[in-house]
Amino acid sequence: MVCQKSKIDDWVDHFKTFYPEYMVLNLTKKTESITFRDAVNTKELYDRPDVIGVINYDLIFRRSWILELENFTLLLDESGLISNEQAKRSKFILKLKPESVILLSGTPTAGKYEKLWSQLKLLGWDIDKKAYWKSYVDTEWIEEDTGFKREVIRGYKNTEHLMKRLSQFGAVFMKTDEVIDLPEQIEQNIMLEPTKQYKAFTKNQYLMMPDGTELVGDNTLTRMLYQRQLCGQYHDEKIQAFRDLVESTEDRLIVFYNFNQELSKLWKVAIELERPVSFLNGSTKDLNSYELHENSITFIQYQAGAMGGNFQKANKIIYFTLPLGKGSCDLWEQSKKRIHRIGQNKPCFYYYLLVKNSIEIYNLEMLRLGKELTDELFKEH
Image (cartoon, rainbow, N blue to C red; front, side, top):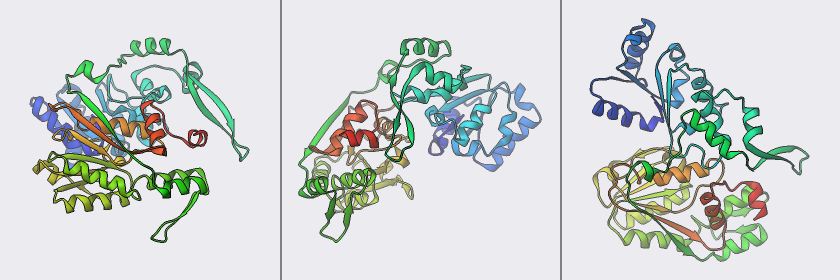
């Protein structure tokens, strides 16, 4: 069983709870890993189908002895994490020799069929990547200002044939509500006016902030960055809208954000309103308030918590800002699943704080279409 590091304990507990007849070993722990490895070396496991080893993606390729396993079932949670076949974890997993494979993912492609190739390879479809792309992915070579050319995906082809081939290898795509009876999902946009600073920066690609900070949009990336910040941490009305939302309910709240400066201002609001807080980001994981207090606010940075974690004690998510860039579609889709899960018995509400006529509106449009707001799309916009 391979999953994200944050899900190790959840899976171990799951197997121990619902399959008590199995020996469940946490392979991130040295002693349990040795027990599992010794069993492999002595061939004991081959006569013991009741043993489960659980390990995370970023550790599995450091356990070379796992390659010795044969005649076993391989289960990948969030299988989209091997979509980059050049990553160490992907290369390692593709070398394994399982008897059967189970891939779990709420967003296996995020609408991008090119991301399926490595997963299909693992399922047993013996097609090389070049042939797969030629058959199903429409691309075009674009010449950049530098004189270099890069391949851009324009769409997909032969998708009906692809679906038939996928079904032959056990791939079945179903919506969550076709498998599990989950509550309704309700999205609400809270629209805010763009600030004078946003308009000035968009027009001049330069702005001197009141605190002396210079915003210089000398290329596409910096323009996108500063426009996002001007729609977030520098937008006082959005901070006030967040305060209004918090004051409107005593329910648990999940808040997704991007930048540390955003967290600093949002955390200050929560403290002023005397709400218990929890954090999940690159440097901190403290979920005590989430677990203990019904009126808590849990701040989650996308990269740290959008792809994993069970937060179904809450049924409301506030999106202070949206993810943007590579992987943003996956992060956004997965973030919504944090509360819309087994065990949730209330309608799920998603509140988007959005600045009118801004990069945020276009970004949300792209996310809903399953596309990422790339440099090229940003230039076109």
